[in-house]
Length: 124
Image (cartoon, rainbow, N blue to C red; front, side):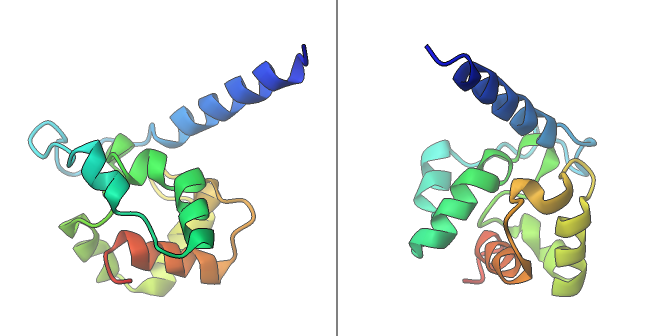
């Protein structure tokens, strides 16, 4: 059996958990529980490439609200979108609060980040 596979899987899981373990959110998640997982999974991009990027890089935190991440398709994005796309892309590239630099999408460019942000904010 390939010993590299379990190590890679453990590393991936650790990175995912670390990415979602940022500072406490402004609102308590207990008072604002996440939408059901089935509702989050229904909110997937139609574009297959964007869907792949979202499920691999964004869903684990933004689909659930883990670590205070704004949940996809909710009004939690309103105040963030008010900051402007340049700020949001800068935050994505450099990391912000609990979100790691590049938001776990190491191969994404600014165009992909913008499309992901617009999707998660419900503007696509």
